Image (cartoon, rainbow, N blue to C red; front, side):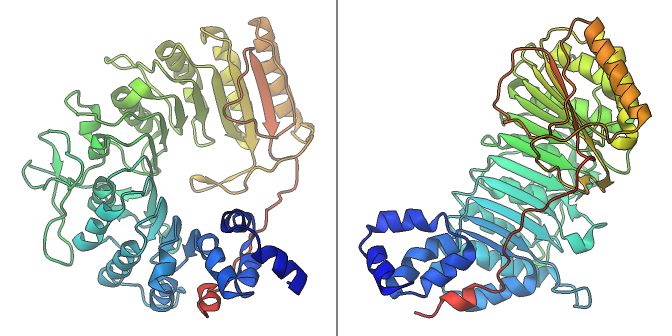
Length: 463
């Protein structure tokens, strides 16, 4: 920065300077913070607004070297308690819990938190979440280096129940708790669990005491502030989900129900249906990886406007699921079906057969094709392009799309098969029947680069 530009920068009001820093990347922020003591102070909120700590070693390094007042600026935190490398000794529960408890104590203004845990947490670490009054968005999963492991229900449910103003919760690969008699759990600090005779065994931590929260996933429905819930690759067969006695205090507006890898499509469909029956009264958006089946208790989704079926969704469940959704909701207008290339023919066949039976339109039906999956996550993210032709699909797939087009035309539903894979905004409204086919396999994948700065905090605390 030249003397002239430094002079112009210094005369700007602090409010303008702060606004400018919000649009700078991390390298530019670090450079600007070295210009003067004032610039350093102005840049701190933007530098520490979002912090990623990818291992327990980095977390401990942060705690040891970053001034306490700097951590107050953190609004979004992505933290892992994984070992620094595969050859490093795995962290103990005590080490992970102590470090996480310390960072949470330093970040009272935290709004968004992503946790990648290598172990379950101690009772004391879980209680730290009760101090995070501004935390609204929470994601919890096992560390990526422990892809085949899972976290226990007492830890995950205890964290969620301890967070006072939780609005959005995403969890993955949660271990099933074993049922045991009532009376073995303790009331959580902020949310009262629903009454039931089915509880999970109390789990003790390194402190020797029981977790201060019920340990089963249905207890998540007792959180009044919760508006979005995503559960992936987790056992959802707890009978409490199907109980009419389950007290539901949350008003979920969106839900994501993933498929459990060790369950059959029918089992996943039955569990997902039970959950929708319990929390469907306020739902506007749903993402499903399993079907919906008929049951004695009618499904009612009066506010549901949008549904997305992921590539894990079994094509054979398409007709029954779409019919059930159409009957359950009078507001449903947007149906997004995602599928793999290998499933495209089956998906087109099932959609062709059920189009005449899905009444209550008009609908905006969008079909997107993906190349592959990795676990329950897309191996390659969709890219944007101004125009991508669909001709990369083979002849059988093209014939299947043609039959799908004929079926929609015969039903009197206008259809548009396109190769444009620019994602529409979720709030964009369309009042006509429209089928859009998006081919994600026809173009090379592009990754937007992000700058990863090694230990940036070691460079900024110099004034």
